Length: 219
Image 1 (cartoon, helix red, strand yellow):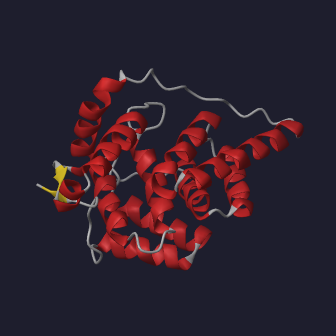
Image 2 (cartoon, helix red, strand yellow):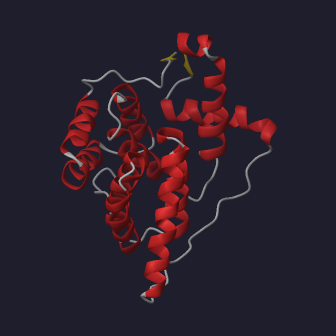
């Protein structure tokens, strides 16, 4: 990603979509979905990012957001708008390889292996992160990792008490090519289109004033 290049309108649209999906604000999500489709996001890209939100905000919010997308698409179709479906992901690797692939993806995204006392205490949480989030989700290749991190930042920023995870994903955003200028754009979008407190949490995470961790230690 060119260090001089600002985020596109398509990329900027991802942030409020994820934020309103994670917060459960269906009215504002509907408006954000309209804006995202108009900015060039495909149906399959949005579906992919809304499914991803289950890992951060839970299945109820993810499923409600997908239902809202269906409503928006039906309304647009009734107005004669044919939104492009977009690419579908390649087939997932076999289930027995998801832990291995997820571990490699998590290490690459974080910049180092992720481990720590929490994962020693609750190893199944570690397994779910590796197999489901960084394996089954991040192995789906019809959305870039940079776009996935834009969605993650938007989704986590609206969740009070998740400052450490937000800081960790600011670091991951840098690891997948997002520049400081682009991360500042994410903060600005959160402040202007979502909520001031979400923007403030994101700015604190960007500046490194909140501790960053994926619930474990990198070593």
